[in-house]
Image (cartoon, helix red, strand yellow):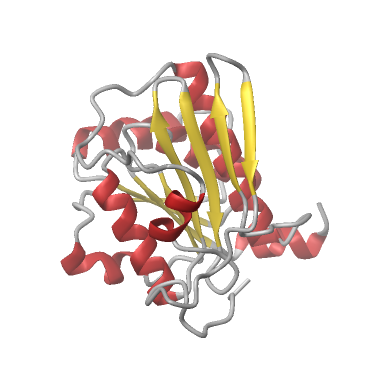
Amino acid sequence: MSEEAQLRLISSTVLVLGMRWTGETVAKQLSLAGVGKIILLDENPKLLSDASRAIAGSNWRNKDSEIVCRAWSFEAQRSEQMIADADVVVDCLDNWQQKLLASDVCMLLDKPLVHAGGSRFRFQTYMMVPGKSACLRCAFPQAGIDDVPLETADDAGLVAIMSMVAAIQAIDTIKVIARLGISQGNELHKFDFLSGEFESIRGLDPRRDCPDCGRANSPRI
């Protein structure tokens, strides 16, 4: 990685939403990569405390990374305040209504969102870059994801699967901050770990008739 890319990581702030699924692993990998400030947000103080201790005691941690814990519920009233200072937001939430809220606010504030969602053996990942990407509300139907659950999932999947999904989220976050490789911003990737099938849905561009992703804004990164 070039010195310029490393400086971008060091000077960046990443907000990780949710510690129940992939959040802790994502934060560990971002710390190891040299992200300067990582904000962990979850309404459950115990999950935050456990994640903070795990990161602090891990050989993965970069001692220069600042870890900030915020025991807040991600809700509409304060969502803009929570996201405003972040350069990138990582969606590790397990509640689909909150995922859609994160998409709405990131589009409004022009912040890249690294999404992952699913349950058990089936997951999808999506790098949403305002100005280049459809919002989650538009991307899901185009990608054939019509049965989005409105309730919180009752299982966290297999640890091996969640670790792999977290790694993909961390890689996408590092790429968009450090400007490494190509971040299309209009591709959603589906994984079926039971059948071994992998599918990429391309062309998920902003929709002109959408009040969120169709706004005339330009990507920050």
